[in-house]
Length: 166
Image (tube, rainbow, N blue to C red):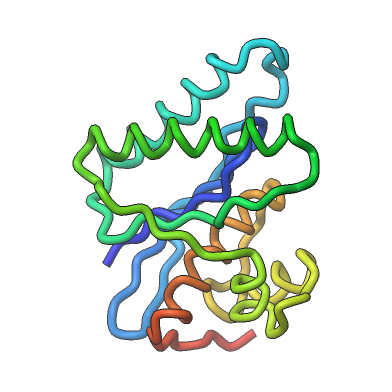
């Protein structure tokens, strides 16, 4: 089973491709769509790059599950609106490619299942990842967050994952 895992943001969308079979989990690919150098006013260009990456990944893999971290209100209206715009573009891109379902996992669920506590820090969650996917180098928190979203989705849905020795 292939999973496309997404941590959405307008400036740095993290993604991961996980393969899960009978308890074995492999991190196949990870990365970010880095829009940080595109001027803030060029929202369309940023959204287009996110859509292009999703389409490119879907052209190389057939995903059984697409999952993203659930959106939440940060208290900053503009930031929340931009994340929702990115969500809309991803949803439309996936729909056009034949994916009608997009699963969501709340940030607290990711923290609980991967970090061991619903209030775990990003650092605690990142430090727990090697037991699931081995040691990796992550460019940003967005990249490691995408991996954690996929792991949390599997664990929440009662999938057993064979842990790795550290």
